[in-house]
Length: 113
Length: 114
Image (cartoon, rainbow over all chains, first blue to last red; front, side, top):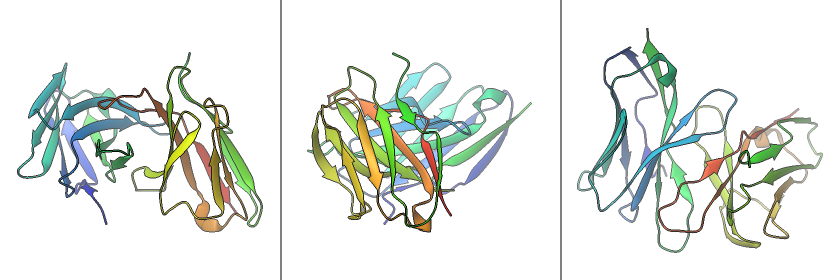
């Protein structure tokens, strides 16, 4: 069963515009959420995270929003740059005992110059 | 410290052979994780160590898979009697101990079973 779902396999955005990547989860015990970025032939790189006690976290061009009641989070990239083209993984963790992180299938972002 | 290091980067093996991968985590990290990633999917959790203790194993980790972290530093992942379905990218990650911590990933070992 997929506990973390990224329903859009790909997204194409014009340079300078906003990119919005979405993620849904089913496990109400998740209380820490992360976004990773992955370039080809590299491992995933941590981008930004949010605790369940917050509804927004911002780091430069990247903002993550969390809607706990809807079990939904999103990553906003503003302004988008060609170098942002990569696969973005949403991930979630239950911080009760185990610390395994569950990943979504990823969304491939294309930022066109 | 340049990050999480995995060796080898690529491995091609014949079905039925055994393979072993190595992961060197970031030196001050006491948590180490193994994940597997197949095409079009996100990383799937396999197992997790805190220091030398293996604390959790996924049901994906069949009895042909074994992982060790003997001195709480580097870790090895061995696959015995490889099958074509084992072909995947095997990722290692490490993190500090703590509740709100992110894991840092290595570049992975790509296994191809022919």
